[in-house]
Length: 73
Image (cartoon, one colour):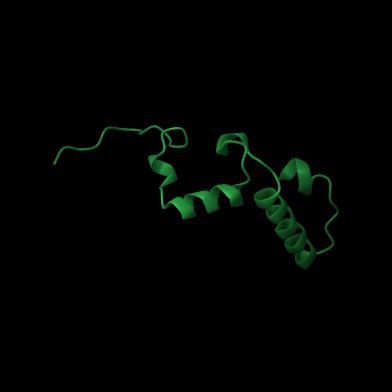
């Protein structure tokens, strides 16, 4: 965000900054494909997850590896 918005934009107040950030977030989430999401936009990926009822954390390609092993019961 800093390279693409904050370093390149002159913001004229808090309201203008909020508007610019909101536009950037909308663009980032709806129009830019991400390699970590299989080259889908975050909005499209979220729609896929919601439609299938699956959990992204259960998909090994998107899940972070565990930091420590689970404690025994």
